Length: 264
Image (cartoon, rainbow, N blue to C red):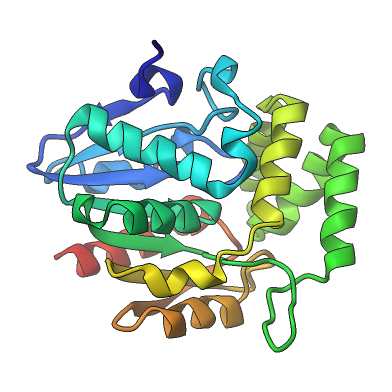
């Protein structure tokens, strides 16, 4: 039977008694956290992993039914937690991992001490008074383009998602990460991500939560971050001095500062 640590390419670093678990965003992998990890390695045990289909995970573990919703990915998180015997986990999720972490904390709240959501979105599609940032037609077009030409989609979307066009190597790193994914698995995860609607799940989250927001985020704008904040009573909302959707890559010092203040 495949273990969770093998399936999700789990790596554990650091020397502390407290635990941080970093969950990457769509099209990324655990390597994207390398600018953040050193700041916490002396005081935390750090758990890094790749979702199935991303990074160096075992793609043979992909099951279309299990991963038809974000709940399947959250189950992976819980299985890693159980296999490693983790307690009082401080889960830090980027983008779609914000909701995956939230779902995991709802299912097993006693395992999680805090949640940190970087650029979260419970729903990317506009609905009534809710402004998710995209119309249904926009999402459909995005997904159709990804399915028809994975490489072209990656080249087009990486700069949009990353922002910070004055530092092109960041977009190039993100584009390369997109392109490393198997096209079918990339398309599947994108469909699950961009069509998800977890707004009703937010009211079930009782874990202490920090929301980190960037300016000029094309994927999860300020109104979305503020919506999540309003749905989570007692949560903290921090507008960082950062732009784009991947501040752990483009402005790691801002993420470290906010995260340390929250965890301490």
